[in-house]
Amino acid sequence: MKKIVRILSVVGLAALMAVNVQAQNVNNASGYVQIYDVASVSNLPLNEYKQYHAENNLADVSYLFWSSLGKMQVKIENQTDAPIYVNWSKSTFTVEGVELPMTPVENDLAEPQYSMFQRYKASEPTLTDMDYEWQKITMGREEKKDEISEILSKSTYTKGNYYLTPNDKKLDKGIVLDTACASYEEKHNALKNKKATIYKVDYTEATSPVKFTCKLVIATDKDCKNTTEIVQSFYVSQVLEMDAKHFRGKKIGQTPEGYGVYKFPERKSTAFYIEINPRNSVEFNKRFAR
Image 1 (cartoon, rainbow, N blue to C red):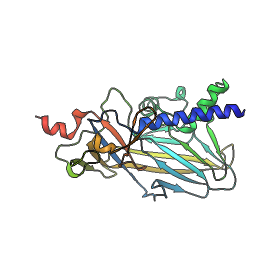
Image 2 (image 1 turned 30 degrees about the vertical axis):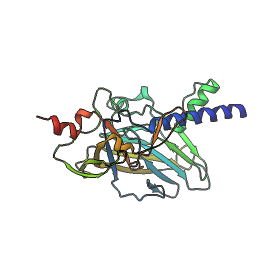
Image 3 (image 1 turned 60 degrees about the horizontal axis):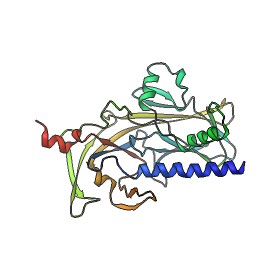
Image 4 (image 1 turned 180 degrees about the vertical axis):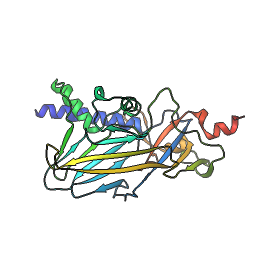
């Protein structure tokens, strides 16, 4: 058993390194990136890690969005002296007015849930899901994943199965901003003696192009008969567009494989980013729009 645990640890470290390598660069360094700031409808406070968080007598829930396309990630910390249980089949992520189970059974989804699930499901698993996949491969089991997770006292559990924007290869990612939108300049994060132009559009909750809600169903018993709901809604309050080199910042090192590691000065849990088609950028449209 100890040997299996060691194998899983090695696999886990390798997988995390691969994720970090991918996260430390952009696909097109000559392209453009949009950063989406996320606001909390209920004005949630930030914790010590500058993440939105909501808490009750059972759990402290942190919300983390940073990734390409954004990701609806929740980190649940048990604040009690006994185990608590999260019912993922009853917990939901709501986007475009459609409510999706946080752990769906794909074959059980009817329209419009199925179509929305296909558009928003994350292609990369969370750490918890990866742990399960390693066990399944190593042990040779094909068991169905539990829909209810036990979180021990003072322990945490992180889950994130959905993007915040559609992952549709047929569609251009991001928003085409008006060429007349506000802009400002600042010192370039990567190029010496250069200025970066940042284009900016602000939104209210009513006008926001991206709105979503997370509902968590938490119980004190394994059967989830005594449940409490934590429901929080969010919206994109601002979009910033900039060149990709400015977005990724200075190179601060490289991996053993030779991949560059960059600073990513804009990184924060209350935002996410999208690499856009350069032809949809404000710069391109200012130069070539008729």
